[in-house]
Length: 276
Image (cartoon, rainbow, N blue to C red; front, side, top):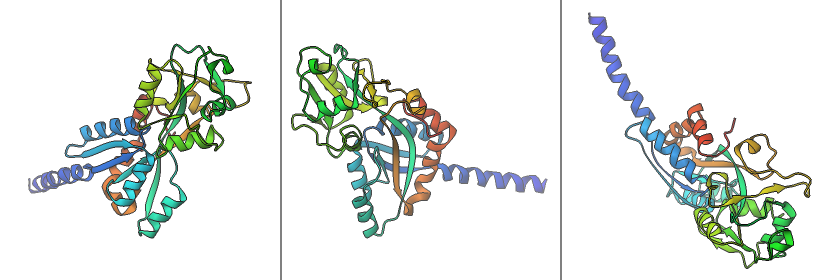
């Protein structure tokens, strides 16, 4: 009997310790592309781990990484890799950090559903967003002015699109810069001649995703989880979490959850591409 009592006592103390080990209280800030995924992962994690509190806000990758440096967020979510100058600032501040890829994204080019254009080459996209082409009739569409929407320069998506689609050329001065991905979806859905670019998870019935060609028109591929996974869709990118190693014990249970089978199942369900 004494042994049983001792065993029960051990269990009674061990269970609260286990629950405590999974409790996470932290703040996540940055990429709008990552925002819906982080919100869903945090929601499920908090349901599974009572006492956890994880707040998630957007603002752009640059905003999140700046917040990491200033100490106003625990995790910076980013749709681009950390820049060299950002790494130097952290190093100068004596702040070691970790980089974790949590998922992949297919960057989709979208137009108004009434637009009859269904596909464009990378070169045509470059000409449109740099202002060389200004009318849809120049790329097979109706005689209609092109209105290009872009994210603001603090956005990781802005920088990725500029580097990988515009071949590092500058956006046209006429491009309308939007503060959030949701604003681009809304603007494109309400403007006949509009074109914009968004993360795959933001595609809905109010916008039309175009097929894209990166071999000068020989093949066109639509953005989708499947085409991103088999690497036939050409505009894909990793999504990152950055955090300081000094707080690793605090955030690691949550990060490990995202990387787990359950977490990666959510990645797929939310319209992103799992890492495995």
